[in-house]
Length: 276
Image (cartoon, rainbow, N blue to C red; front, side):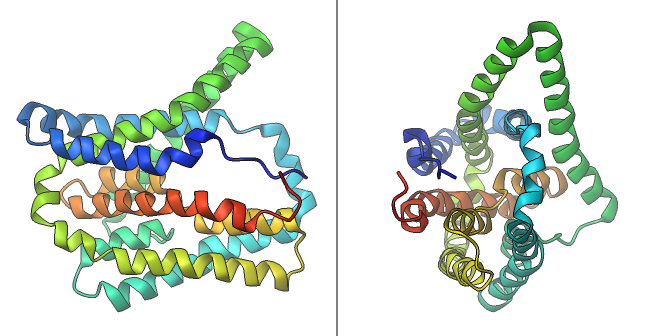
Protein backbone atom coordinates (compact mmCIF):
# COMPACT_ATOMS: atom_id res chain seq x y z
CA UNK A 1 0.00 0.00 0.00
CA UNK A 2 1.32 3.42 -0.96
CA UNK A 3 1.11 6.25 1.52
CA UNK A 4 -0.50 9.30 -0.09
CA UNK A 5 1.53 12.48 -0.38
CA UNK A 6 0.17 15.73 0.99
CA UNK A 7 -0.82 18.26 -1.67
CA UNK A 8 0.45 21.84 -1.51
CA UNK A 9 -2.97 22.95 -0.22
CA UNK A 10 -2.84 20.33 2.56
CA UNK A 11 0.65 21.44 3.53
CA UNK A 12 -0.41 25.10 3.67
CA UNK A 13 -3.89 24.67 5.12
CA UNK A 14 -2.77 25.54 8.63
CA UNK A 15 -1.49 28.89 7.41
CA UNK A 16 -4.59 29.42 5.26
CA UNK A 17 -6.92 28.75 8.19
CA UNK A 18 -4.84 31.03 10.41
CA UNK A 19 -4.99 33.72 7.73
CA UNK A 20 -8.77 33.35 7.54
CA UNK A 21 -8.99 33.75 11.32
CA UNK A 22 -6.87 36.93 11.24
CA UNK A 23 -8.88 38.35 8.34
CA UNK A 24 -12.14 37.63 10.14
CA UNK A 25 -10.79 39.19 13.31
CA UNK A 26 -9.80 42.37 11.46
CA UNK A 27 -13.20 42.59 9.75
CA UNK A 28 -15.08 41.95 12.97
CA UNK A 29 -14.95 45.62 13.90
CA UNK A 30 -17.42 46.33 11.09
CA UNK A 31 -20.87 45.78 12.58
CA UNK A 32 -22.45 44.60 9.33
CA UNK A 33 -19.76 41.99 8.74
CA UNK A 34 -19.74 40.88 12.37
CA UNK A 35 -23.49 40.34 12.29
CA UNK A 36 -23.29 38.52 8.97
CA UNK A 37 -20.66 36.14 10.30
CA UNK A 38 -23.15 34.62 12.73
CA UNK A 39 -25.30 33.48 9.80
CA UNK A 40 -22.40 32.11 7.74
CA UNK A 41 -20.59 29.80 10.18
CA UNK A 42 -23.03 26.90 10.46
CA UNK A 43 -24.15 26.81 6.78
CA UNK A 44 -20.52 26.89 5.62
CA UNK A 45 -19.66 24.01 7.95
CA UNK A 46 -22.67 21.96 6.81
CA UNK A 47 -21.78 22.40 3.13
CA UNK A 48 -18.13 21.58 3.91
CA UNK A 49 -19.11 18.40 5.75
CA UNK A 50 -21.40 17.39 2.88
CA UNK A 51 -18.49 17.92 0.47
CA UNK A 52 -16.30 15.73 2.68
CA UNK A 53 -18.88 12.93 2.78
CA UNK A 54 -19.36 13.11 -1.00
CA UNK A 55 -15.71 12.10 -1.42
CA UNK A 56 -16.10 8.87 0.59
CA UNK A 57 -15.68 5.85 -1.66
CA UNK A 58 -18.39 3.46 -0.51
CA UNK A 59 -16.73 0.64 -2.42
CA UNK A 60 -13.64 0.87 -0.22
CA UNK A 61 -15.59 0.14 2.96
CA UNK A 62 -15.28 -3.58 2.31
CA UNK A 63 -11.53 -3.25 2.87
CA UNK A 64 -12.20 -2.63 6.56
CA UNK A 65 -12.55 -6.36 7.16
CA UNK A 66 -8.94 -6.83 6.06
CA UNK A 67 -7.63 -4.43 8.71
CA UNK A 68 -9.55 -5.48 11.80
CA UNK A 69 -6.72 -4.82 14.24
CA UNK A 70 -6.27 -1.33 12.84
CA UNK A 71 -10.00 -0.58 13.01
CA UNK A 72 -10.29 -1.96 16.53
CA UNK A 73 -7.28 0.00 17.74
CA UNK A 74 -8.59 3.17 16.08
CA UNK A 75 -12.00 2.82 17.73
CA UNK A 76 -10.47 2.26 21.17
CA UNK A 77 -8.01 5.14 20.77
CA UNK A 78 -10.57 7.64 19.44
CA UNK A 79 -13.65 6.80 21.49
CA UNK A 80 -12.17 5.62 24.78
CA UNK A 81 -8.59 6.77 25.24
CA UNK A 82 -8.60 10.23 23.65
CA UNK A 83 -11.66 11.43 25.63
CA UNK A 84 -9.91 10.34 28.81
CA UNK A 85 -6.74 12.23 27.83
CA UNK A 86 -8.80 15.33 26.94
CA UNK A 87 -10.64 15.13 30.28
CA UNK A 88 -7.38 14.73 32.21
CA UNK A 89 -5.69 17.65 30.45
CA UNK A 90 -8.75 19.84 30.90
CA UNK A 91 -9.11 18.99 34.56
CA UNK A 92 -5.42 19.52 35.23
CA UNK A 93 -4.76 22.66 33.17
CA UNK A 94 -8.16 24.32 32.63
CA UNK A 95 -9.84 23.73 35.96
CA UNK A 96 -11.14 27.31 36.29
CA UNK A 97 -12.32 27.63 32.67
CA UNK A 98 -15.42 25.47 32.12
CA UNK A 99 -16.08 26.69 28.56
CA UNK A 100 -12.54 25.88 27.47
CA UNK A 101 -12.80 22.48 29.14
CA UNK A 102 -15.97 21.77 27.16
CA UNK A 103 -14.20 22.81 23.96
CA UNK A 104 -11.29 20.50 24.76
CA UNK A 105 -13.68 17.64 25.54
CA UNK A 106 -15.44 18.13 22.20
CA UNK A 107 -12.06 18.19 20.48
CA UNK A 108 -11.25 14.91 22.20
CA UNK A 109 -14.51 13.33 21.09
CA UNK A 110 -16.32 13.31 24.43
CA UNK A 111 -19.93 14.40 24.86
CA UNK A 112 -20.11 17.83 26.41
CA UNK A 113 -22.49 18.74 29.24
CA UNK A 114 -25.63 20.27 27.75
CA UNK A 115 -29.37 19.78 27.72
CA UNK A 116 -29.98 16.38 26.16
CA UNK A 117 -32.57 17.62 23.68
CA UNK A 118 -30.41 20.51 22.49
CA UNK A 119 -27.36 18.29 22.12
CA UNK A 120 -29.29 15.62 20.20
CA UNK A 121 -30.71 18.25 17.84
CA UNK A 122 -27.26 19.73 17.25
CA UNK A 123 -25.67 16.34 16.57
CA UNK A 124 -28.52 15.35 14.26
CA UNK A 125 -28.22 18.63 12.35
CA UNK A 126 -24.45 18.47 11.93
CA UNK A 127 -24.28 14.75 11.07
CA UNK A 128 -27.53 13.89 9.32
CA UNK A 129 -28.01 16.96 7.12
CA UNK A 130 -24.57 16.68 5.42
CA UNK A 131 -24.99 12.90 5.09
CA UNK A 132 -28.41 13.29 3.49
CA UNK A 133 -27.18 16.06 1.18
CA UNK A 134 -24.15 14.04 0.10
CA UNK A 135 -26.28 10.95 -0.54
CA UNK A 136 -28.73 12.91 -2.69
CA UNK A 137 -25.90 14.61 -4.61
CA UNK A 138 -24.15 11.31 -5.38
CA UNK A 139 -27.42 9.68 -6.40
CA UNK A 140 -28.41 12.61 -8.62
CA UNK A 141 -24.97 12.81 -10.24
CA UNK A 142 -24.95 9.09 -11.00
CA UNK A 143 -28.52 9.08 -12.22
CA UNK A 144 -28.34 12.17 -14.40
CA UNK A 145 -24.74 12.25 -15.59
CA UNK A 146 -23.18 8.86 -14.89
CA UNK A 147 -19.51 8.40 -14.11
CA UNK A 148 -18.39 11.73 -15.59
CA UNK A 149 -20.85 13.66 -13.43
CA UNK A 150 -19.67 11.85 -10.31
CA UNK A 151 -16.08 12.70 -11.15
CA UNK A 152 -17.01 16.36 -11.55
CA UNK A 153 -18.84 16.21 -8.23
CA UNK A 154 -15.80 14.66 -6.57
CA UNK A 155 -13.54 17.36 -8.00
CA UNK A 156 -15.88 20.09 -6.76
CA UNK A 157 -16.02 18.50 -3.31
CA UNK A 158 -12.24 18.10 -3.12
CA UNK A 159 -11.58 21.69 -4.16
CA UNK A 160 -14.27 23.30 -2.01
CA UNK A 161 -13.55 21.71 1.38
CA UNK A 162 -10.64 23.94 2.39
CA UNK A 163 -12.19 27.23 1.14
CA UNK A 164 -15.39 26.43 3.02
CA UNK A 165 -13.43 25.69 6.20
CA UNK A 166 -11.58 29.01 5.83
CA UNK A 167 -14.90 30.78 5.25
CA UNK A 168 -16.38 29.24 8.41
CA UNK A 169 -13.31 30.11 10.50
CA UNK A 170 -13.16 33.66 9.16
CA UNK A 171 -16.87 34.15 9.80
CA UNK A 172 -16.51 32.76 13.33
CA UNK A 173 -13.72 35.20 14.19
CA UNK A 174 -15.59 38.11 12.60
CA UNK A 175 -18.72 37.19 14.56
CA UNK A 176 -16.86 36.78 17.85
CA UNK A 177 -14.16 39.42 17.34
CA UNK A 178 -15.16 41.29 20.50
CA UNK A 179 -14.97 38.08 22.52
CA UNK A 180 -11.51 37.30 21.10
CA UNK A 181 -10.17 40.76 21.95
CA UNK A 182 -11.57 40.69 25.48
CA UNK A 183 -10.80 37.04 26.22
CA UNK A 184 -7.58 36.61 24.24
CA UNK A 185 -5.61 35.83 27.38
CA UNK A 186 -8.14 33.18 28.33
CA UNK A 187 -7.87 31.53 24.91
CA UNK A 188 -4.08 31.40 25.29
CA UNK A 189 -4.66 29.09 28.24
CA UNK A 190 -5.59 26.44 25.66
CA UNK A 191 -2.05 26.29 24.31
CA UNK A 192 -0.48 24.13 27.07
CA UNK A 193 -3.13 21.36 26.97
CA UNK A 194 -3.26 21.41 23.16
CA UNK A 195 0.51 21.22 22.84
CA UNK A 196 0.57 18.41 25.40
CA UNK A 197 -2.14 16.64 23.39
CA UNK A 198 -0.24 16.83 20.10
CA UNK A 199 2.93 15.56 21.74
CA UNK A 200 1.35 12.71 23.71
CA UNK A 201 -1.06 11.28 21.13
CA UNK A 202 1.46 10.51 18.33
CA UNK A 203 3.75 8.85 20.87
CA UNK A 204 0.93 6.77 22.35
CA UNK A 205 -0.39 5.78 18.91
CA UNK A 206 3.10 4.73 17.82
CA UNK A 207 3.57 2.58 20.93
CA UNK A 208 0.15 0.94 20.51
CA UNK A 209 0.75 0.20 16.82
CA UNK A 210 4.09 -1.41 17.59
CA UNK A 211 2.62 -3.49 20.42
CA UNK A 212 -0.07 -4.73 18.01
CA UNK A 213 2.54 -5.48 15.35
CA UNK A 214 0.81 -3.36 12.71
CA UNK A 215 2.60 -3.03 9.36
CA UNK A 216 4.16 0.30 8.44
CA UNK A 217 1.26 1.74 6.46
CA UNK A 218 -1.24 0.85 9.18
CA UNK A 219 1.01 2.41 11.84
CA UNK A 220 0.90 5.64 9.84
CA UNK A 221 -2.89 5.42 9.55
CA UNK A 222 -3.41 4.80 13.26
CA UNK A 223 -1.12 7.68 14.21
CA UNK A 224 -2.76 10.15 11.84
CA UNK A 225 -6.38 9.26 12.68
CA UNK A 226 -5.57 9.42 16.39
CA UNK A 227 -3.95 12.84 16.18
CA UNK A 228 -6.43 14.33 13.69
CA UNK A 229 -9.67 15.45 15.29
CA UNK A 230 -13.08 15.98 13.70
CA UNK A 231 -12.85 19.69 14.46
CA UNK A 232 -15.40 20.87 11.86
CA UNK A 233 -18.00 18.42 13.20
CA UNK A 234 -17.31 19.43 16.79
CA UNK A 235 -17.36 23.11 15.79
CA UNK A 236 -20.72 22.70 14.10
CA UNK A 237 -22.13 20.98 17.18
CA UNK A 238 -20.73 23.72 19.43
CA UNK A 239 -22.24 26.52 17.31
CA UNK A 240 -25.63 24.78 17.24
CA UNK A 241 -25.72 23.62 20.87
CA UNK A 242 -23.88 26.45 22.65
CA UNK A 243 -24.74 29.67 20.75
CA UNK A 244 -24.46 31.76 23.94
CA UNK A 245 -21.06 30.34 24.94
CA UNK A 246 -18.70 31.51 22.18
CA UNK A 247 -15.53 30.46 23.99
CA UNK A 248 -16.47 26.82 23.36
CA UNK A 249 -16.59 27.31 19.60
CA UNK A 250 -13.48 29.51 19.61
CA UNK A 251 -11.61 26.80 21.50
CA UNK A 252 -12.50 24.40 18.69
CA UNK A 253 -11.14 26.86 16.13
CA UNK A 254 -7.86 27.24 18.00
CA UNK A 255 -7.38 23.45 17.93
CA UNK A 256 -7.04 23.13 14.13
CA UNK A 257 -4.65 26.09 14.02
CA UNK A 258 -2.20 23.84 15.88
CA UNK A 259 -3.44 20.50 14.53
CA UNK A 260 -2.98 21.23 10.82
CA UNK A 261 0.71 22.22 11.00
CA UNK A 262 1.35 19.29 13.36
CA UNK A 263 -0.18 16.84 10.87
CA UNK A 264 1.86 18.35 8.04
CA UNK A 265 5.07 17.92 10.05
CA UNK A 266 4.06 14.50 11.36
CA UNK A 267 3.30 12.96 7.95
CA UNK A 268 6.92 12.65 6.72
CA UNK A 269 8.11 11.55 10.17
CA UNK A 270 5.75 8.57 10.47
CA UNK A 271 5.84 7.57 6.79
CA UNK A 272 7.47 4.13 6.35
CA UNK A 273 11.01 4.20 5.02
CA UNK A 274 11.14 3.97 1.27
CA UNK A 275 7.70 5.55 0.76
CA UNK A 276 7.50 8.41 -1.67
